[in-house]
Amino acid sequence: MKQIYFDNGSTSFPKAPGLGEAMGKHIDYNGYNISRGGYSKAYSLEGEIIEAREAVCRLFHCDDVKKVIFTPGATIGLNMVLKGLLKRGDHVITTSMEHNAVVRPLAQLEAKGVLWSRAQCDEKGRLDPQEIRKLIRPETKLVLAIHGSNVCGTLIPIEEIGRICRENRIFFCVDASQTAGSAVIDMQKCNADALIFPGHKALLGPQGIGGMILSRTMAETMEPLFSGGTGSASHREEMPELLPDKFQPGTLNIPGIIGLKHALAYIEKEGLVSMMEKKKRITDAFLEEVGNMKGVRLIGLPAGDDRCSVVSLDFVDQDNAEVAFRLENEFGIMTRCGLHCAPHAHKTLGTFPQGTVRFSFGCFNTITEIRFAAGALNRILCG
Image (cartoon, rainbow, N blue to C red; front, side):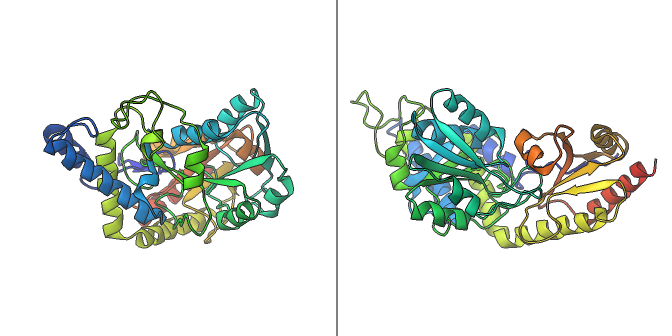
């Protein structure tokens, strides 16, 4: 039975062509360290890491490679921002669509005296930026917003939120977990002080690598969540202030960075906008197919420019988990069922506690697969 992968919101598959070969070649022939060796191979490898930072800067319109901090993933980056920036008495504003990668660290910080509020989104996952403005207090230090919902795909207006934050001198952090590689993100236009991204989703890189881009002011204000050797300022017992070293102790996931660099090169070659347009065509085709199916409730927005390629369905007369099980076992279609680590988003959308069946599409999916999935759903719904 042919397998069809519709879980790109969890991790992309397949990855960028040649990714495994590029990582394997590094491990087999160039598996040295950086900032720890005074020999030519180490210097050459450090040049490749800089090239990876340059590719990240081009993608997100960042003006300085030193502001790119590599992390093991978006969750670690979000923890580093929240726990490195906030102190007792500080106030944070998030949205009602946030992932547990934001909510759980904030729950920990709340126990230590950090205050936080949720700006309420509507039943389609949309946020009126004025809801952010209403929640601002004198002690508000940070606004953190997910850019694209991992549950229903609705996009949050980050440029408008960024303007509000800049007017009120509040730090702004964008969680681009679902949109890095699926949307044009310009750090300058959205006035972001921190942009958090995973490497393994729409950027088509390997698991275990991601990053954050920090404004100079954000980097100066944050305390490092982790500390240790950096290969720089080794005579000091304190962490160095220079970037990216301040937030990158220990040995980096160099094979992961090499893989990410390879994936970013593939995206540049294919063209980000071209890949976005293909995913939009696929998503719109799926939305058209399921739009008139009886017993199916579309969660979030219909086809349009204000959503990404994540679609959630609620099967009114059937158990969602059973539908997902049958899709895989009878038709080879892999989806994700449940609450998607975002229970409050489901409460906002009216799908708590049952959750949804999530279909998330990537640039390697096809219209043929979409039509096959629609036929499978019709057969399941008919008995």
